[in-house]
Amino acid sequence: MTSITRENLELMIELQSTEIEAAGIEAVLAVLPEQAAALESELAHATAIVASRKSQAAELKKKYRELEAEFEKGQARRQKRQTQLHSVKTNKDYQALLKEIEDIGSACSRMEDEMLECLDDIEDAEKALADAESTYGEKKAHIERKNREIEKQAGVEKEKLQLLQSTIARIADRLDPKLKRQYDTIKQNSGGVAIVSVNGAVCKGCHLNIPPQLYNELHRENELRLCPHCYRMIYVL
Image 1 (tube, one colour):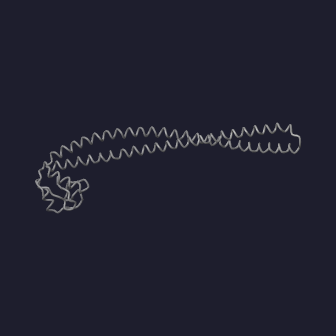
Image 2 (cartoon, rainbow, N blue to C red):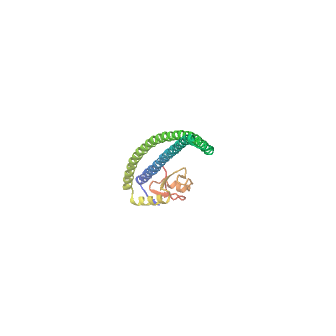
Image 3 (cartoon, rainbow, N blue to C red):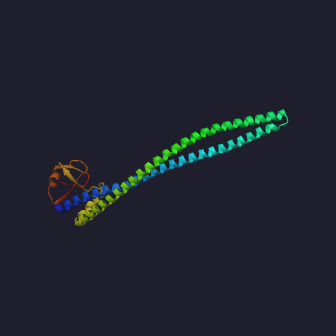
């Protein structure tokens, strides 16, 4: 057992309370960058969707231009063959030209169908792109607002933490060095909690009953006791 004054006991209680509060703020500050990173990931995903929709629309437009160019070539070739019909000498050549003109016409008809389908695909792709851009704009605005809130919260929490750290240093300076060393050792070995109250003979650190004699001894203000179960410093209010 260690002798302790009421002042040192109160200092340790205040020290722990302040350290717990500071630890809570540090935990909040540790999470904030993860929240910001998650928001940036959301924005990156939305950006990738917009890029994908743009690429899809561009590919469809390129396909349509290629079909259109091929269709115009087919039409020109068909027109040329029709003109040549007036100058053929034999029926065989005439029939061959007619067959070629028919084949060209069939190919152009298929291309027209494909072009119409491609136009529908382009319309759908441009609508999907517009939706993606709208979603991106909304998400970007939301994320920028949330990031400002995170930055503001981080600033507020850092100010609180600085004040608490100053208080911790001030209390530690006033605390008996021997008790401070004992406090730090117990805190390190007990999950960050070195001193707890006892209420109705129950330790608030481990929630187990302490012996009646020890509970009675706790009422002596000049002696420091440890819980026989969790080995934390204990006191009664």
